[in-house]
Length: 86
Image (tube, rainbow, N blue to C red):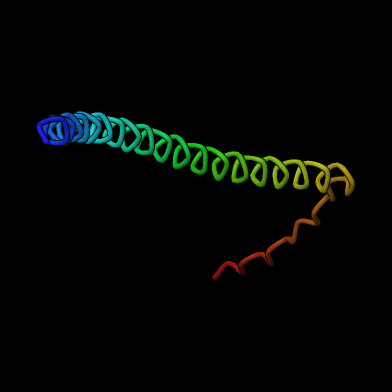
């Protein structure tokens, strides 16, 4: 009878210790999860910035190529009619 009682107490103490360790592990995993979430958010932001920068660079290149394809035109200057002197 005493053996069962002492065994139950040992099991109870062991369960308490395991619960404490699990709680500590859960805290650590939550912290790691928070860190990973922050990193993923930063990566998503950086990817978006890279896409925007690449689009801007493509636009600049297209504008530059467009200007090189068509030579600059000489614009005819319109002469304004002379004012009559009164």
